[in-house]
Image (cartoon, rainbow, N blue to C red; front, side, top):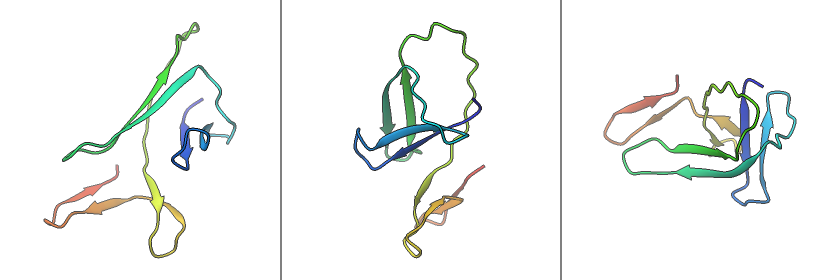
Length: 90
């Protein structure tokens, strides 16, 4: 498994984790936590219970939100702030 995707409607029952093939991941996932802090990018924490088998983990994050113009879900490429600074996805 190379990548995971979290899809959520904001409720515990409406949250799914899928792999790159689109299959549900039902590993020993105990909790998903989003941390939003002032002056920092949001952090995503995936908490696993004890993993008995060896694990080789690597991560990549992309952020998606509803496009306010098209109403379609889209990846965020950059965010421009009122002070003129800009964050760009890598």
